[in-house]
Image 1 (cartoon, rainbow, N blue to C red):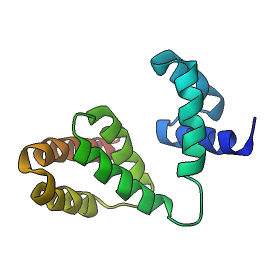
Image 2: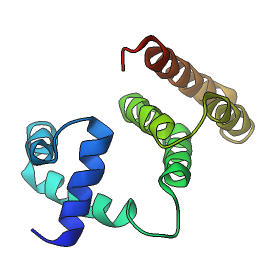
Image 3: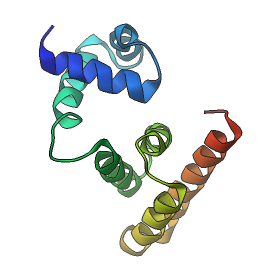
Image 4: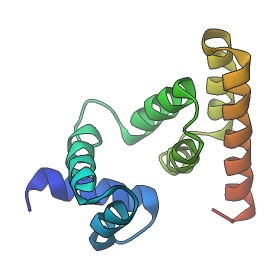
Length: 127
């Protein structure tokens, strides 16, 4: 395995809360082996350099997912990971409120519900 692939395994293991060795099988079961290999390699480059902190990357990804809409399960995982990377609940709330102006209230309100549900799960220890 190459270094980029190893970094991707580490990133996804952290995000999914599973051992690094289980990441390829996780992807294969849900999306197929080829897709998994591409995603792992992509994450190895996207989540590992010195330009942005993990916190900053999480803010960018949460924002991108909210603007896309229709990606609730992905957003849920990234909200949890954002908190793990130091993004506060108040910051997540502010992101949703700001985006409402630019992407529309219907899409932002759905994202806001997801963010609040995930924050409640984290607070209740059910993440």
